[in-house]
Length: 240
Image (cartoon, rainbow, N blue to C red; front, side):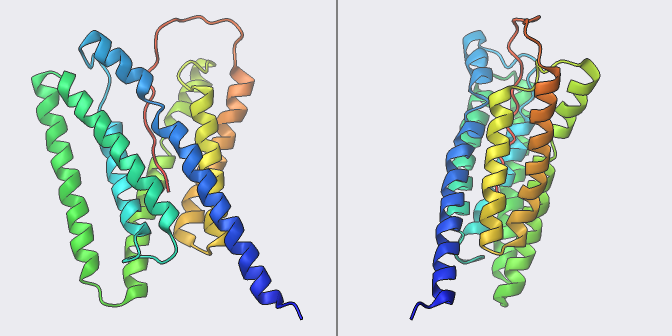
């Protein structure tokens, strides 16, 4: 006789792992999105007017979400840990490049922010380890990482506002918007199958924002290019 419960659990696990694996793959598209910006920085030997703050905040978000995905905080979230640890490495590389080519004032500012990120992360790690109850520890870290992720995924609202005001998609690259949508949608499904509110709620919001960006892109897309300058592609890296 077929055990329907075991079959259901098996199917759910397969779907969860498939969604998580897809999310990891699509996240690569988000992680590599700042490369054109840093090619320009390296070529010109200057950070120009580009801001390094998005990479600082993305690093903090990735570190917090990585910690949430570890077995010490939540069980069966290995794919969350892998994607965010990779994201943290990308953001750290971007920060190193930015500091290398920034002027003295920006170097000091970036190093100060980087130190603050590491201190905040250390406080969260050490503080959460003091919580004896496993469920409470998971909830505390989940809330912290969830709030961080929501604020990170909400950052496209600034670009959405810019697109509506200028009626131009120059500063909203299609493939970045598509990657953000696919990544958020994948981890939304991952969170649903894993019954993890701290994953499916932030990524559900990210999915809605991703759909909004794609709709706006299709609506405002112009066939003729009016500018040849390279836009600043900010890293949302977020991930889950």
